[in-house]
Image (cartoon, rainbow, N blue to C red; front, side, top):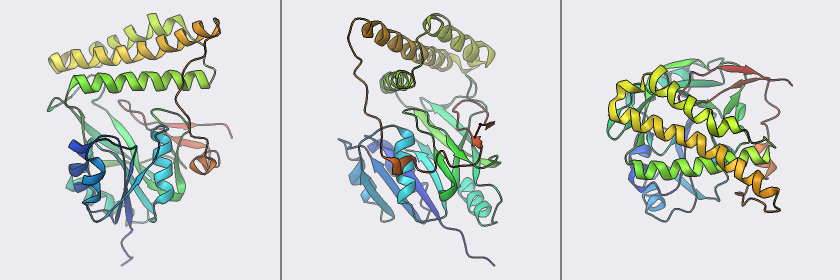
Length: 297
């Protein structure tokens, strides 16, 4: 019998005192746990350090891809699993992961379905009924892309789908979620500015409306009741916010006013290997089915 493959659990945090304990408890089957905290002002770090398996680091936040790649660099095992603090890895999924990595698989990454909960109830539609994310990978064969928000995990070849699911407790309070959406909109606009994406009137006038129509009607958010209505409307607002900010920055630039952008991670060690991976990219896209995108070398 071959020795059991070791796995590192990785969690990035900021003010996650309500979530970090249950999240780490669901990863207790891992051989080591790494928490990368962005200088929380609540008890997140204290609670994380209470777990004897956890190594806690504090680091400036440059985006989810930067934090996760930096954490991957600290891991010592062949395999890593990455969770957000509001996610949980149930026992059946943990057992499946250990069985899969112990079988010496050909694949370097795996896709996991998620159950998403809003205000204590599962969101069954609204574009999230087929939610799948790539979170399990070989440490030396997978990296996150260099973007400020919604970074993608890239690895060689396709990422087979596991049978069991993660639990994602995405929204406990709409007040907190709208503040998070505002940050995502700002970071998304900043990424577009940095990438020289031009502002488009369609981003303000068409994309938000289309996102609401797509998620609420075509993807059956109407069947999620008031939760679905509120959720789809907030998602639509997030799209509007990103493109409105980008347009406003370009309008001000013509007046000689530069935007106040967040800092980006320029450390080459964090991004080493991103451009050296084989040509197939495994895409981690919340709310959509995973796909394999072939990129030019």
